[in-house]
Image (spheres, rainbow, N blue to C red):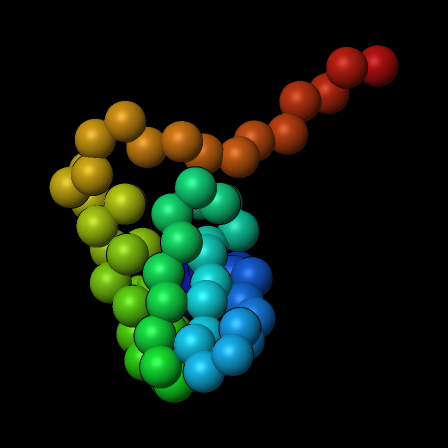
Length: 63
């Protein structure tokens, strides 16, 4: 099973989160478990190429 790290927080009654490698794609839900399910669906869409123009995070060695 693959794993993807994500950032999440609660704002009032809503849970918000995004995948660490895809910070431009935010999801929200009324429960933490629904927010995780939204993130799973989003991950599938992003990695299968179903969303065009995907922005990603990378690391560059400069020294």
